[in-house]
Amino acid sequence: MSDISDDDIRQVLRESEVWAVVGLGDNPARPAYGVARFLQSQGKRIVPVHPSAATVHGEPGYRTLAEIPFPVDVADVFRRSEDAGAIADEALARDDISTVWFQLGVVDEAAAERVRAAGRTMVMDHCPAIEWPRLLG
Image (cartoon, rainbow, N blue to C red; front, side, top):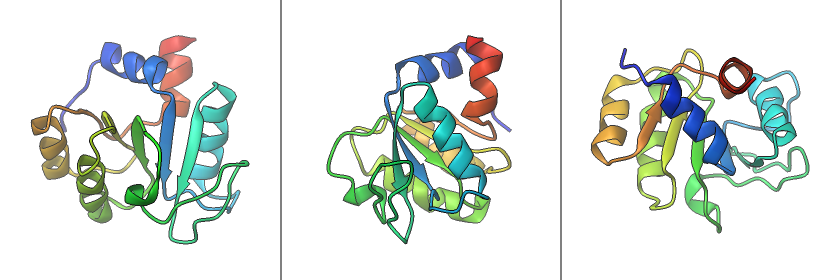
């Protein structure tokens, strides 16, 4: 698995303001729900991306990354590894997404290589709700 430095993760956490949370629906039992709430508590804007396009934590949802009508910094992917590559490609189709973040347990080396080859930041198999306290205190 390709590594990313703590400094690079720290920079993403500090500088990225708008996080599209792919797989975030209105089910509070799902990990994406709690992580999105955590990101909001750190002052980040979250954008739910889910087939249901539900409003979550007060933010309207969208079915796909392509439907989001404003700039996004990070595509934070809460989907199975086998689905993650297609999401990474959808993120790469947008010029504004500078970071693709695959959550804990989400690994697709080929997708990660495509993201890096496009000059974007790739974080894989990490969770911002774990990395934030570890790296930013």
